[in-house]
Length: 288
Length: 248
Image 1 (tube, rainbow over the protein chains, first blue to last red):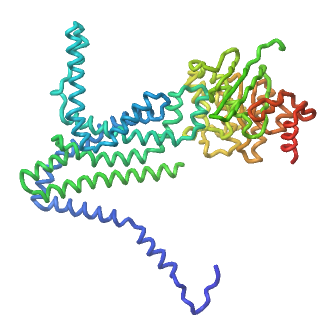
Image 2: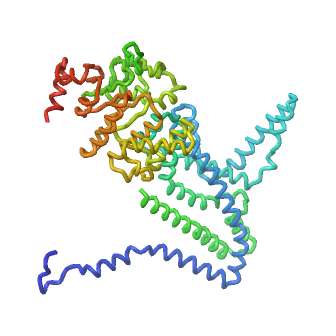
Image 3: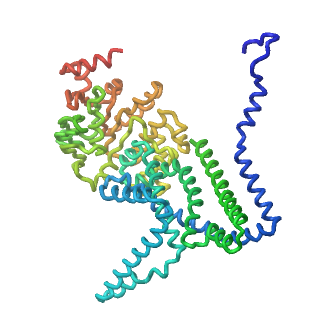
């Protein structure tokens, strides 16, 4: 470094600058969220009205968590199959998966939830039942019984909500899986095939393990998104935290208490999960 | 040995990519135990020819027979045939999510149905052969290019192939690593492995090749011996190409 001429002050004080920089880089937004959450939970524990609302609303937590988890696991299966279909050379599989993805992406989730739960599932079950009756009429009773074993009355709104969420998110995840698979260099498939592995074996042992690892952060982000979108199942009267809050607010007229608690509950869940995704992302980057 | 059937038969092979004729009517027989080096300017169809042999590229027309079995239009047995043909790529193509040992055992377990112990034992044997048994537990990203390529050779050998294909195995290597890979290849050649190599390593051609094929514009211009190539090239294009690569 060149020597500092005496008597002339440097324009920028380096030390001062870097500490200012450090302050600037702190995640202030995150502290604000934590403060809000702490404040709200403080109010819950001290104020009677908030305490009562919280005790009522937290009953819905189990349904929210269960709906999200089950839907997500099924969505991953749908997504993986449709993602593999999207890159398949078979014209039928390719177009079927494309159709699925484009249909879902072209319709709002709220509409899809109404549609799948109240039209899609009933029509499908009725169709199966009709096949069952038709088989029974022709004396193939044992097969007929299988098709008539489940009727629309047997399928709860919770199950329909899970079906709707899983089917919808399957299409979103399909695009993630497709991108992940396509991000793997062509040479990997060629090397696997040149060793004598079939397309399926190459996918399973060579391509997918790498692709899934690459898209883990994206999958995590979609899980966070699904936690939030699970609130939409309240339109089916499924008693998740959103629906329970609405019920509580409607019957006690304590709108402020209900919806503040509801919002902070979602915020707590999503912020914690997002942090988890970020940690995961950082760990994967170190590993590379 | 002279009346033995060739192990690789290529008959009137054509491969087009759109309007581009990558391989334009190639026929050749390769006998068991022979080392054939394919040379030629870039874009002359050498790699495409090699990739047609194990059907990584589907030929537009023509036939390829491996050890008496037809490769072309044999979708069902193609995996079985490929398991008998080892291939080494320019960019190594090791599986980065697996350790060196797992790279070399994967296909053994999946295709050959070998037990873990047996596969590991064979893998270590092959890794010893290419000179890096101590790297068995390393990940490919921690190896040098030369080491990666040697692992790739061990991976191919672990399937006990009848034929080895090398697609410019030293082109992506730093100069000081070329020798370690060529030494392994030379060793294989001396043991009688049938090898088809796309390579411009003239030292390797001199010391290991039985036959040299010169390709240009998708056609075989000259199919000769190393001696014939260096001392008595017949075709003007071969002479020009040789003068260009041997000048330095």
